[in-house]
Length: 152
Image (tube, rainbow, N blue to C red; front, side, top):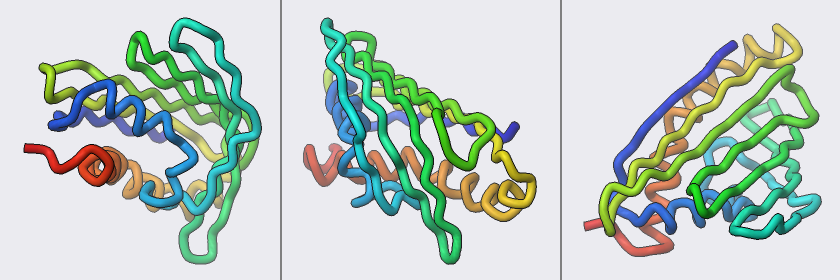
C-alpha cells in the first residue's frame, strides 16, 4: 500500500494548527486536489473530542472521485484521525499530530496510507496523489500564515 509520512516544524501554535486542520469546510480553498467537501454530520463527544462524517471530492484534470471519511478530532491530545468509509479506495487512513515545540511553534506530523480498489485507477491517480501529499503540510502552513498572520 502506498504511504506518506511528513513532519514539519511550523512557526504557529499547535492549538492553532489543530484548529486549522479541523476546519474541514475550508479545505476546498487551499488543499491540493480538494474540489469540494461536505460535512454530513457532526457529533460532540465531550472533553474536546468531536467526530464528523464528511464527503471529500478530489479532482485533477479529467479525474474526479468522491469518498466518505470518519474524522475523529481530539483537541486535548492535538490529534486528528481520519478513517475511510466509502468510495474508490480499498483502504485509507490518515493521522495528524501537532506536537508543541514552544509557545510559538509546533511540529505538524502527517501520515497517510491508502490503496485504490482498482489497479487501473491506482496507476492513473497514484502519482498525482503522491505529489499532492508532499504539498499538504506546506499548504496548511501557508493557510496558517493567512489566518493567523505570517510566521516570524
